[in-house]
Amino acid sequence: HSVTALSSAFMAMTAGLAWACHLGRPREPAGWFRWFWPAFSLGFLFFSLDEILEFHEGLGSWMKTALGSSETFRNWNDAVVVGYGVVALIALAAFLPEVLRYPRFAELLATGFGFFVVHTAIDSLMTSSSKNIPEESAKLFATAFFALAALTVVMTLQQSGQRELGAPSQGDGKPKAAGRRRR
Image (cartoon, rainbow, N blue to C red; front, side, top):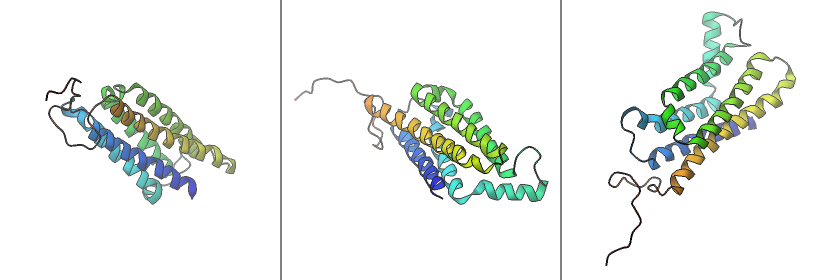
């Protein structure tokens, strides 16, 4: 299915861009906040793989066998996707200062999450066959906005003169002041 492949590709791009953010980010935040970009990257790598390998469908099938039919959702795999969203919100709240450090990132991430909510609501609550175009469109918008969010941080890091992405750390990771060279 082409929409699934494109959605997975957007999430894989998000994972790669988030890892680039981790590599290019100054090492200022000690402790908990330094784990945001690796966690964000691994989360989107998982989502990308789930999109193709259908982990949530398998878990949904297992839940149907163990718990019976859902009275709230169309099927249990929809409940799993809603659970993904809840876990993502909790994780983002835990890392909120790092998210807000890049305002455009926060805006694009929130927009993507809004499209994720629309996609999940359509998928979980509607049974009509006419839901496919709005549902799949919302999914693609969500994943594209997530990739754009990570891309804005990569571009911000490059434009601000912070160390080159992927370069080994030298010194304290802070940009060096421009000055004249001595001969």
